[in-house]
Image: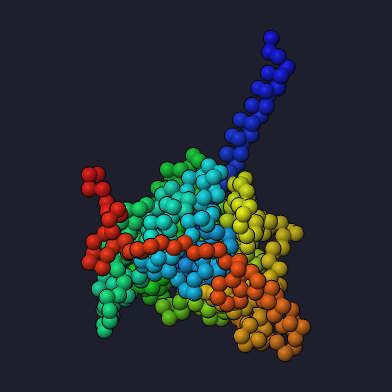
Length: 477
């Protein structure tokens, strides 16, 4: 006869086991598709009438537009924010972006969203542009990703002779002085597969898409996190032959339409594996579009590199059929910083207790709860190390000039209302002053965490074309 204590132990064991199974079954999959330099007005859901984006149109009709979603003005800071859930300046205190062979990068002690999800039993994969450091200590495989395939930085960071300083079919730039940048490497995990040339640039979207679809199929029976930061539509513009010349907006439009195709392939793979009811997909851009290369940020003012809305507010769509209300839109402030806390909480994990996380769990906003409000009482616009603007509610103050805009009434920042609202100006200047003892209004503040640093930094492919020792393909395979 089984004793009462043993029966109790068995009951607890069964309960725990079933609880673990239930938790695993409920753990949602996460996919983040992050486009490079896509403008607010470059896709159909955000008003574009020229570029054909049927897959994104469908995604928006089945999902929710986050119409006040903020990134950063340029690449590396934006990606650091997404990975760490913190203001870019807090996690990666650099004035601009990282370059090949830099001796600094995202600190190995930073805790990324991939690491937190991996702790919850997730398979983690990344396909695309990293741009948080190209030294071994800084690569995605050292920051929580099981698998990585892509470029360690932007597709224009290479020698002009390799076609990375000019668009598809255009002549190479002349009068380049100095040795320039080293060859651009395509990586799989920590192996350099090849030097990237024009034909490889043209193949990037398709290759990334094939890798992403394979990852979904390979891991459909377990919870997974797929991070897919495209190299498109960053200059140089290299649409594939399948899409070249097909849009009404030149090479830029061609590449936007190819990206839309890629999104369709990823969502089709989710549906094919019958994962749509348990998969949250976020589509976004790392910063505003580069107007001189064809991007459209209208109705926003400015573009990439600025803290006008067109430089930092990005087109974003959230998709999770049955959870996220279809064909809806919110203007609540959200940001790249929210991805880490939101995903971690949805996966049943806990945020790291030993560091400040500036982002928020925006599940109520994503799910369209009636009482959901933006968690940001104030929002700071940093350009590198400098605080250039602050926002509270609809009000945005440009600190240097003192210009004030009501973004609810004037999304284009065309009507300066500072004179009529001196009390709001003072309130926002007080808000800006609050960060002096934390992130700092300029320079590196006391709340900024240290950069990762290495000695004897070297590019992954040397200037002579030789792969750095330790990164060569295994010739025995």
